[in-house]
Length: 412
Image (cartoon, rainbow, N blue to C red; front, top):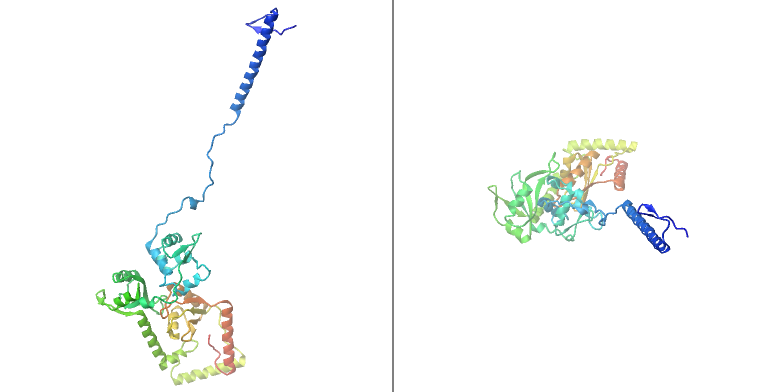
């Protein structure tokens, strides 16, 4: 047999014994096998060294929305909380026709919080949507929607006006008196639920003029009657106090007495321009001129047309109101051409000379929330089909009058 040469100790031996040859071959095979195993181990080490090291990472959770992860904490302004609760209270909401109408826009009674923050009183407090949300969360009868944009009352409204029996009319107070000052003053006498300054409608003033009287609503009727019967001084002067219900009855009686007088009846029949007729001579001349004009209108087939946007609806008027009362309230916004109203009704229509005046009246009353006989009515522009129907009705009335030889102007 021929055996391969084996390098050992630096020299070559070709004459080894057979037994030794077997031993050497076995040794050589083992060495080769060991060498192969070493090569495999080296290869694994190299492969392991070359492979990218995977770091063990903690399982990452999906990022939460910023609002949910860290909610902004808004401090509750007690003034904002108190005012918002007043808006939705038994003392205000049933009377506030504008806000009440907003609660009826949907079944749940939600109202946009942004609308509340636009109110004059809320602007004085620099109220924000987030501030109202924070305040409502601490209220016992208010709720906020999931998006934090709407608010509603959670309790049912009363079936009747609960405020009349527990309210008083008090005066005279200094003309610079504020609602907050009166509330603080009367809180020493009992639990005050609301304070309303009585403002008299005057020309040039959108909100009316405060002349020193106010309505104060207390927690109960007994409390109001007890305070009303007591002697209280304010700024060194004794206050004149009467139950609000009795005061309104007196006002209503005076109005009825005024409407029964000749001068008042004459005013109730005032013309389209709101001008009262003078003496008989002037009236005869006016009637003669009107007849001539009516004859011309009848002959020419002309009638007075009115622009759109001049009609204002006043819905939810208190008992005892009269046409002069309504006209006096709305004259401060512009030239009131006509007031359509019948005593005992709850709705009136005020027609202005220009659309700009009508728009200003709606805006002003929605903000000032003036009362008419103890109730804040809803004031809106008449538009759409209702406006078209009113214009057509006025046209037909004028044509009927012209056909009888009367004035071209009609009621509207």
